[in-house]
Amino acid sequence: MNNNFALEVDNLTVHYGTPTGDIIAVNDVSFHVQKGEALGLVGESGCGKSTAAYGILRLVQHPGRIIKGTIKIDDIQADLLNEEDFRKVRATKLSLIPQGAMNSLNPTMKVYGQIKDLIQTHEGKKPKNEIKDRVNELLNKVGLPSRTADMFPHELSGGMKQRVCIAIGIALHPSLVIADESTSALD
Image (cartoon, rainbow, N blue to C red; front, side):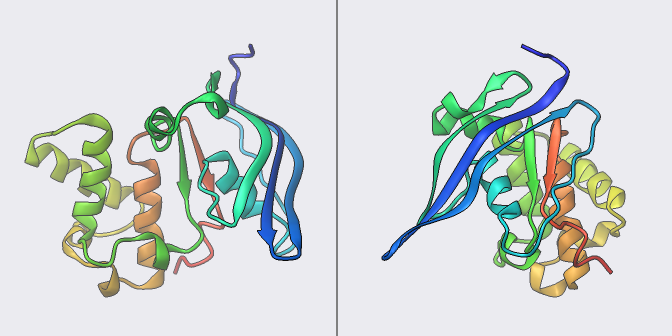
């Protein structure tokens, strides 16, 4: 085991099933990210960058499926964890800032509630003033005014929604953040 790696991905393969056969979206992709290192995946639109990110986080939706691959997050053999245990790792050790902020936020909840739910799901119930301070601090970190916490996603510009997704992605101080074109909508 190498304790210098935040993420180790070996032979990740993801297929999408179609009526005429599988489409190979990610084929035997391997890379290692050391703690404190930044890694960028570059390629044409549709080449599998987002699918690789979603595969690492086990968020590939049907008809997609992970065929094989080993994934270690901070020396935790993540691909062997059951879904409940992996959910505990997701957002705390490894988080995602999604490409499409419009589709990532719950339209029926204010920003405050979405960040509060994430924190309390992983850390348990917290005093209201502690959560409020933490939400305001996160919003400040991403360049949003504290009043943003009391807004619904439809009241935000595209760039503001993306900043909220960034705040959610860093809320639990993960070891590694996967940013899937996270700055494309920023204003």
